[in-house]
Image 1 (cartoon, rainbow, N blue to C red):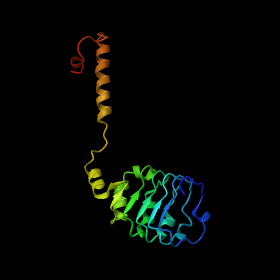
Image 2 (image 1 turned 30 degrees about the vertical axis):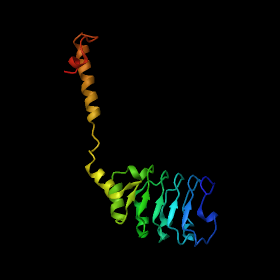
Image 3 (image 1 turned 135 degrees about the horizontal axis):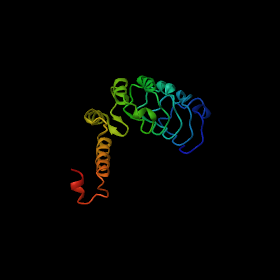
Image 4 (image 1 turned 45 degrees about the horizontal axis):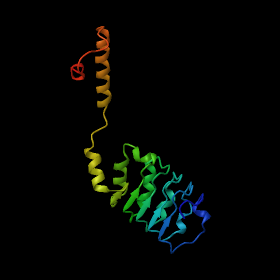
Length: 171
């Protein structure tokens, strides 16, 4: 049902107990209310919609894969709703505002200790990469600032335009 226009799961009906895999990407979904009608859902692909509230997903006891890439989930607290999805092994929240939050990985690790994949990467490797990732610094900005100051000093010396090799100018 990808690329359909669907505002809510309630628009689909009330009982889908035999559906195990559901694809509803790019359907303009704004909410997940009514998802409980899919009692035995194991895989849910609802990427690139407009979802920001995950509460109703907590009723999906059999959910193992959840793809929410490109939605509007912005609050870390929304991840708590996934705690009840005890079988969840694969979660994708790439391109959601929450994924750039400083405490994102830590919160996912806390709420979903059994998770194997996060944002299309093996979760343990993802955690290790984040732990060893250099903190974002202003090294590049500092370098540029220093270069600008050197150029300004050259201008003050009335020796503009500079002559010589670039290596000599950077000394």
